[in-house]
Length: 323
Image (cartoon, rainbow, N blue to C red):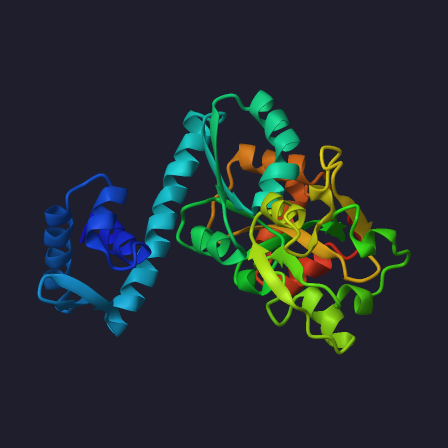
């Protein structure tokens, strides 16, 4: 059994059982991957994948367990390399972060600027996506850290560190009837078609809670993962926008932002990572740059806790900033 064989079966699963795409992702040949997977199956005495001729059509029950263990082994192998690099090249390396478009566009630039000055030899890679995509990238080992803003339940099996709270604003054009309303109510908002984040309404979100509590079924006409896209479609008159307040900037002079902090509960931005992740020194610094109360000492305390409820209690006395 070779690490490369484990890398192949994991990547095949990552690429939805498409061996050609797995080969492209790993910069190797499709026949080479197929041969190594067959050799691994022969060694184990079972099939990891179900096939229809030469094509993989499904993963076997045993294969699912094998791939899960293979993922962890690959992460641990990365950890071994990270430990070695921490001693041989402490200020060199790669930091891979998955987050939402809003965080990448409006919160990270100043943090990355500061980090890059401190660590010019660390390469930064930002992956943007939905909460599900962010979670999958973290679990698969594609990224080291995830900055999450929605669907925290997806990350229950990971270490989650609270960063700050953020509120939403209702976004309309200046000539929209709501632009003149004082003390906007959820009933008034519910009269209009809405444009918001893809994960704005999941059945358990803060937006769901607000509308459900008022007995209102919202009319969602458009969703997007990007606040700039939401603003574009508000400008087109498609509906009333609901987005993070931080995403309404001085450049948006053609849009009116109505504070909705009294309508929706504040959401929390968190940094998440796997229990098995070896954090380099520069990773601790990045976390603190992003959220100053997350000092290395506090993060290390959280790492020693195996239960997320215990991690939450660790920060009970921390007053989170509201964005």
